[in-house]
View 1 (cartoon, rainbow, N blue to C red):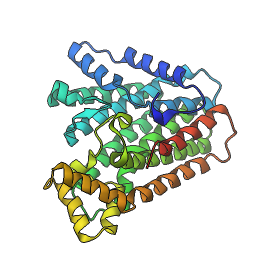
View 2 (cartoon, rainbow, N blue to C red):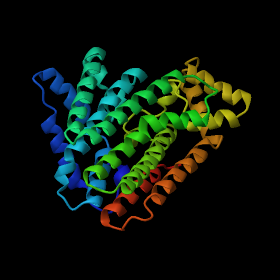
View 3 (cartoon, rainbow, N blue to C red):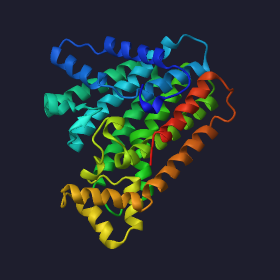
View 4 (cartoon, one colour):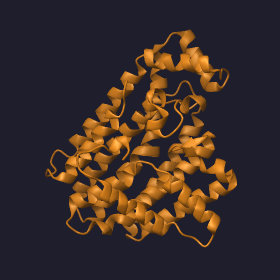
Length: 326
């Protein structure tokens, strides 16, 4: 199991349910599309989003967990679809330790595969009724809004922390929250409990994205499933970079800008830029921000009845930041 999900309760049974259902639903009349869809979804990943859906569902009802399985899988499929498109936009080489889908099958077909996965996710979400379907659709809308906002701010060295947080709210956190909220909805929980579960997962999602941005600087490739320092090669300004540019001297800041703009691509310059990010205190600063979101996540469930599933959700929340080794 991925490092981020090292928790005391065995989640392998839920992972097996998710993975088995994924293989069942990823079937079309076109063999090439089948291969691409399966390649995109089966190449690993933490399955964090569908696991949260199943855990939240069980937390709020005694009905069989299989009732929420298609909802959980819908979110994982939508997440995989968004990664296909992200990799094309970022011109990435690897995803989850494997060659990116568009590198293997071509950009045009990869775009179509992503579209297919989105449509499949909508169909599965819609099977739970209009209210749930609307939340699933809004999660996809937020993904698109976040991606456009990120794209329009590439290379914007004046980007504020507020804008950064708006981007990750849409690209990551809302998606986490939507999964938890819809799980509580189909479990029949109260509107207040639905909102609490949304807030819990939303804050975990915020911390998760900040932690990913930190790991892009200090993580190891085998642990994070992609080549480190990806963002610094694509002019994507993350929280550590925003902080460092404000704290560093003009020479250090200019070096980071030159690397981000692609003006300096040699390994020595990239390593110096990375060291600047670390020495500036940006990693420690960003980690504290992530911890604050985890604290908010736990606070949102302060009135919930303690149970094994709630404890597991808390452990998952804390493991989001504990995977960072500085």
